[in-house]
Length: 487
Image (cartoon, rainbow, N blue to C red; front, side, top):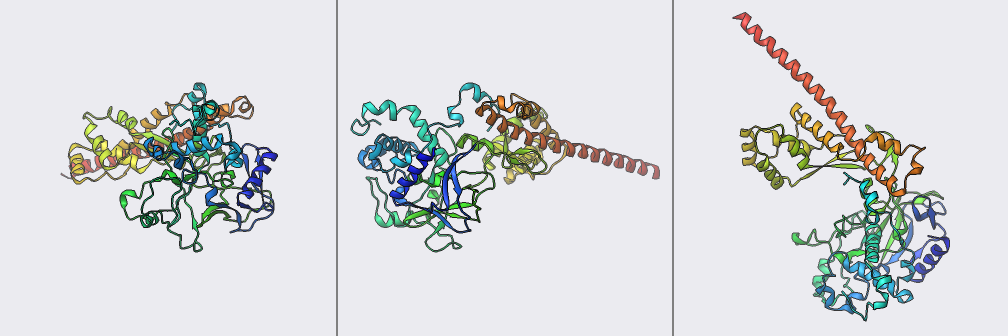
């Protein structure tokens, strides 16, 4: 974002009754991070950086398009998922200066580095990783504002920048032709207030929203709904997904959060959570996702010092997924019975078909339990199934041997080796890589380091286990000879 656009955005924001302390907070460009917020002066803890009127958030609840379309909005399923919000953003952008959010939409990115926009060659680098109304949508605007490319663009904007802004207790939906009973609407939209916070204010927590093209959703905020119906507890209202001007200007980085968005009845406000020195960037980070998620959702990756047992630069939040079918394929070669019944039982009882390895390089307990289930003798398997009791995650040499084969096989799913990726990222070669390829290499290298570290740990334990078994065998043999001698 250029300095002129940033200045225009701040002017627009304040003209729409947003309040920014421009003496302390500035919007600038950060190399490698794009635009972001910076502290212009020292900022104390618990200081309000800016406030945003609720009606300035852009959602299907605040946009007038749903009301204009009437019953057709629901007939076309636009009240579910992200399609409605994407269409609202496209429509508002097509209105130009007539749109309340024109000053905001003009600042949003028009290009993304997320894999949705990558070509086949770049995508291969990630191998192995985790309604038409002419009165509202004039034909002459279709190619510029309502193309599939713009649809994907709006979806990516939501994926990378949106927040979940739930209704305040007693607030009525806007732009919805089917209004429910007032009291019922108030009850189902009530929000719990954290007792540790000031009355009338709630700190928001991260959640996942309805996905676009199967993605997990954006990094955003949630305050739990006070709804006694357990069937609705996990239901997320698509109308809660909103674009929040100014709040989405803040960048994110691993364990760097120093500001958080808070809800109040008529506005949202960004508040510092720790002192921020002049010149420091203001970060709004919710959770510390792995690089695979950062790339898919935001188009960037984190590189910070790793914690032991790993070393170098990477993302301490990285993970590797190991599919259950990979484990089954290895275990099936070690046993003489069919594993289908056991796998079906596991999926019914545990519902885990993917196991996650983290940067601590320890085998996940669920993975160990699953391997033990596959290896149980027939009588023990029947007892476990009868009692609906999962095997304890106990490591032994048989489990460790299976784990070694699984990890080695998982490493072979990548198109390159760990050493080849490290060579690609060497200072003398990294400049030769495109941005997309550099990101892909960083993602897969982080995963390979976890796999290699876990494999090293498992091999050490397997050797120790084999040594213990041999020692026990010799002791038993000596004991047996002693008994014969005494006879």
